[in-house]
Image (cartoon, rainbow over all chains, first blue to last red; front, side):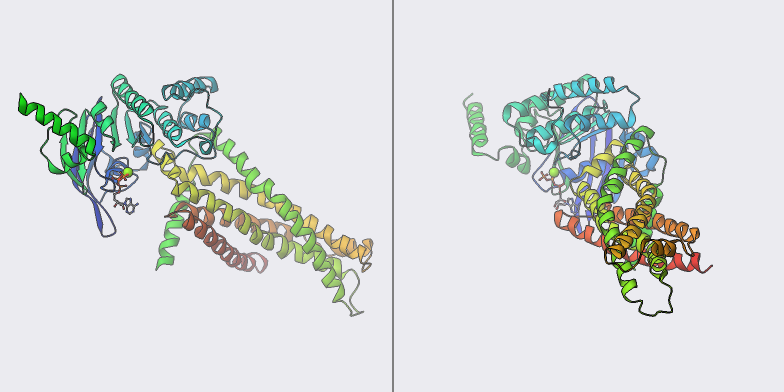
Length: 257
Length: 247
Ligand SMILES: Nc1ncnc2c1ncn2[C@@H]1O[C@H](COP(=O)(O)OP(=O)(O)OP(=O)(O)O)[C@@H](O)[C@H]1O
Ligand SMILES: [Mg+2]
C-alpha cells in the first residue's frame, strides 16, 4: 500500500501539486486520471522520489520514503517497476538487454535463468522473438510494451505505469490493460497507472484519483465515475460527442422507465 | 557565487561516483566497453597528431639553429624534452578533452533528457557510479598508455622529418634524444596525464549529468564540458609543474 499525505510540489513559482492526499491499495489497479498538464506525471515522480516533494509524506507500507537516505531508498526502489511516459528505454541496448538489465544488476541468476525470465516477460507483452531489435527499430507501441516488460522483470511489489496504452491500437491497448490487471491481482502488486483513456478507466479502474489543476479533485471507482455529478469529472468522461450521446441515451432510458 | 555552487555540486558528485560498484561483473564489462570507447578509439587521432607535431617540432628547431656554437645534437635533445614535458601529456590531453569530453557529455546528457538516468535510478541503480566510474577508471588506466605511445610517435615523426629533409643524421638525432635523458620527466608526464584524464572525464560527466532541457541544451553542455575541462587542464598543468618540477 502507498499513502500520499498532503504533498505539495512547486517548480519555481508554479505550484504543480497542491496538498494532495491519496491511498493506493495493494492488489488493486489504482488509476490517476486528469487532463493533460495537470500534474499526473509529477505526482508519480514525486512518489518514487524522482522529484523531491516540498512538503508532505509518502509512505510505502508505512515507511516514509521522503525521510530515507540513499541506501534505504535503493532497497525500496528494487521493489518498484516503472514505465515512463516516454518509455525511457536504454537506446544503446537491444530489447533483450533492456529487459535483462535489472536482473543483471540485482539478481544472482545464471544467464540461462535470466533469458527465460526475459522471454517470459516479452511473451506477456506479445513481443516474442523481437529480442535482438534496438529500441530505435521498434514502433512507439512496441517501445511501450518493452518498457512494461522491463518494469515487471523483477517481479515488483509496486508498479507505476505512466500512460501504458497511449499510442496503442484499441486491441493492443486492451491487451496491456488486461496484463496490468492480471499481474496486479496475481502477484498482489500495488499498481498505480496514469491514463487518459476512458476505455482503460472502465476496464481496470479499481480506484480512481482525478487530478484537476494539481488538486485531488475526486476519488472513486469505475462504477461511480459514470454517475458522478462532479462537473470536471463529467466533462472529462464525456468529452467526445459520442460519449455525450451515450450518456443522453442512458438518461433518456432511465427517464422512460 | 554560481561558480562556488558548481564546485560544491561537482565534489558532491564525486562522492557519489566513488562507491563500490553494485555488481563487480557488470562493472568489469562496462570498464572494457569504456577502455575501447575512450582508449582504443582515440589511438588513430593521437597517432596522427603526435607524428605530425613531432615532425614540426624537429624541423622548426633545426631551422632555427643557425648558431654554429650549438652542437648538432641539440635538435634531438629539444625535440625529446618538449615532447616529453609538454606536448605529449598536455597538448594531447587538450585534444582528447575535445574528443572524449564532448562525447561523454553528450552521451550522458542524452540519457538525462530521455529519462534513461531516471530509469536507472528507479531500478535502484546508482546511476553516477554505474555510468561514470568505468569511464574514470578507463581514462586513468589508458591515458598513460596513450601518452607513451604519443611520445614514441612524436620522436619518430621528428626523426623522419629530419632525415627526409637532410637536416640531421640518424646518429646525431638519437644521440640528442639520449643526451641528458631523464626518466623522472617521463614519470612527471605520466602523473600529469593521469590527472588530466580524471579531470576530463569527471568534468564532462558533470556537465552531461546535470543538463536540463532538450537536444539543444545537450549540445551546449557538451561544448561547455570541453571548454571547462580544457581550462581545468591548463590550471592543473600550472599547479603540477609548480609542485613537481620546482620542488
Ligand atoms: N521538471 C519540471 N520542471 C518544471 N515544470 C514541470 C516539470 N515537470 C512538469 N512540470 C510542469 O508541471 C505541470 C504538470 O505536468 P505533468 O507532466 O505532471 O502533466 P501530466 O498530467 O502528466 O500531463 P500529460 O497527461 O500530458 O502527461 C505542467 O504544467 C508542467 O509544465
Ligand atoms: Mg504525463
